Amino acid sequence: MRELSRRLLVASEIAADRSVHEAAVMSEKLRIPLTRFAGAEGFASLLRRALVLASVEVPLLQSIKVGLDGRLEGFEELAADPGAAVKSSEAAVAITSHLLGLLGTFIGEPLTLRLVREAWPDTSLDESH
Amino acid sequence: MSGRGNDQRKDQSEVRVPIRQLPTGVPGLDEILGGGLPEYSFNIIAGAPGCGKTTLAHQIMFATATPERPALYFTVLGEPAIKMLRYQQQFGFFDHATMAASIRFINLSHLVMEQDLGAVLDAIMKEIETSNAGIVVVDSFRTVVRKALNGLSEMELQGFVQRLALHLTSWQATTFLIGEYVEGELRDNPVFTVADGLFWLYQNVERNSIVRKMQVMKLRGQESVPGMHTFRITDAGLQTFPRTFGLVGQSGQVKGQRRLSTGVSELDELMGGGIPEGDSLLLAGPSGSGKSTLGTQFIAEGLRQGEPGIVAVFEEIPAEYAQRAAMFGFDFDTPQRMASSRSSISVRWTSPSMRRSTRSSTALRRSAASDWSLTRWSASRWRWPPASALTSASRCTA
Image (cartoon, rainbow over all chains, first blue to last red):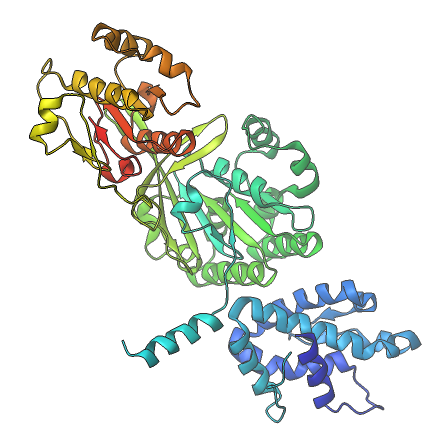
């Protein structure tokens, strides 16, 4: 799911002078179809698990939390850290790939990709991932 | 079914999400479950007090917990952890190294007593998030629910159970909720609706005996063997005896075309050469009519032809059985000492406490499978012979 997550990040075309973190943009895109599918609490629970798994790879994510509404919180504090900006894409890919990986574990790849298509309707997912 | 239909079905099975099966560590239980416990499943172990729920949960926990994915055992107003551990470590499956590295006990009694279900859920989730637990046990969940029902609607309770199941699954934990339930509670109880697996343990009185049985009433995601399966609890822990040959329902051994001599040439002639190899034969008749003698002759003939055999005796001890055989001129002592030889026999005595059909036949079937390529069985005064359990041997007389 890592390669797919990288492609999704590129497809998201997040502006370089963005005011929000790439990881927040990615998870927000997935939040709508996943909330419809698994419920708000279900999505928040999966995202929380994905965040913990991603934090092992990208430790700066340890300060990030999942809010009650399923949104990632705490990126404002990270903005002051110049090292965090460098790792921004890496963090976004780590969270997204773990989130999609969890979904793949539970419902399988075809259904996971269907949900991804809902979030990124204009992105081709046909290449190998 | 058309070829296209077959192709479509094959394609479907290729994309289906795989469900890993965890070994339970309970002999025979994986066979009943159709291969093992579905990973990340949310299960209930139910039954009356003393029927083995806690021991079953411990045995599974010791078989599956690892330092990377440890087990969390939440105790709630039931048996205190200190007493539980004192008793559980008497079982053979209890391993102190696993206990130290991979299992944690957490007492939730104060939360259940003083706070609401939300606080209980938060505490459970906090522990799971911190520990990366792969196995979670709540003992007794019935206590949690009973306390909560005071002032809580059924809808709120259902919401709690659903949220608990949702979070535990999201965190990739395989869960067991233990509860002293009675079967009448199956209907309309949200706990049973949400559960993926429901294991019901029984302890029934049958005449003067106590018989332990288990039923897998529900198991999402895979086929399990239906019906009641006998189990026992020994120093080693639980041991289950599947009612049938797992889901296969038959022996993998193909019956031969051979006829086996009974040891009585005239009877062989009447039977067209003897007993067909692989058949189960019931020998019935009044007391003193020669049933046991014919069984002994059958085994003795096998020894003469270099075929190993097993004699299951229920009302004599092996030495007495060998003495009786000696009276007919058959030496059963020497072959019993030649365990690795093909010309050997094993005389197995089954104690009164083991005299349950499924348990006895499974134990004998296992010894047959492990000892030799068995061709001859003789079971003296076999009670309720389950033919399916005996078809792994090529013949049996009772």
